[in-house]
Amino acid sequence: MHELKDEVKSTTFVYREKRWPLPGNLWKISIIHVMFCRAFEWLLPSYYTEDKPRSSLYNFFTAVWWWLWEHILDRQHGLSAAGMRPDSPFVEDIFHNQFVVPEGTYERIAAGEINAKQATITEFAKDGVVLSTGEQICCDAVVLGTGFEAAMEILPLECKEKLICDKGEGPWLYRHIVHPDFMHLGFVGWASTNISISTSTLQALWLAAIWKGTISTTASDMEHDIAKYRRWALERIPPTPQRPCTIFLYIDLYHDQLIEDLGVSKYLHGGLFDDFILYYPATYRPLVHELSIDRASPKPSTQ
Image (tube, rainbow, N blue to C red; front, side, top):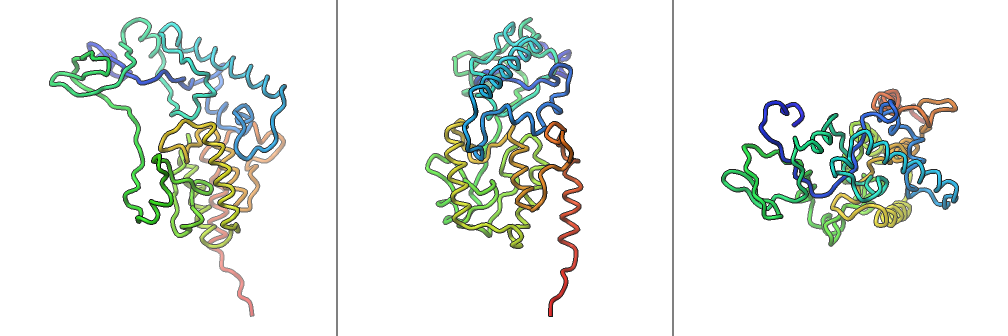
């Protein structure tokens, strides 16, 4: 509602939990250039494909990094002054939906221009809403930012019974795309990342390749990988219906898996400093073009 700040009499921000925002810039460097390179993921907790434990020195370095990150965020946005600094560390918050706030939002909360209330809306009244705290807020308009849950009603019953867990989680898939028991069914776009247009494109290429037989794997290998990812996710990711497909900041590591499965080097930029160079949608354009040409090229006939 930043664009309407001069048009409204009052604004109330109702939130369930305090969450860490993403900065637009970090040390005057665009957050895009910081987060969307492979080197950034060295600072995250280990991905499920990482088998060797990290050294104490490595863990100390990453702990210092995230301590600095939190203090920079706090100072840039004024979280503590607004009473909006989360209690949990940033690195424990990475699997919740990330968001970028407009400049000055937390300053306006600290100044009282925006009323921030930790609660939920329990019902709508004639002239406003009633919160879980019992407080009623009079308002002319309500903007809901509550997210969504995927519905699986379109799936055949035998698929739903196999893919959806008792807790409502699922489906747990190989590469977040297919299940070995239902290889005729593909889930493109199910995995959640911060650059979904690139993720969905790579998933579509991967799905086409596995259906054509270009990618060779066995049901046993797929089941083993799914089980390994699931153990990791149950330890790392908060329990939500989207837990099986939550990737977020592990974007490049996931994309690397898809690209290498397609038989292509994951180092699309090339050179010694590839891990430090930004990966964004245009980076994958030559790869898409190359694979499209390969699919369109006629195969030589054999006698």
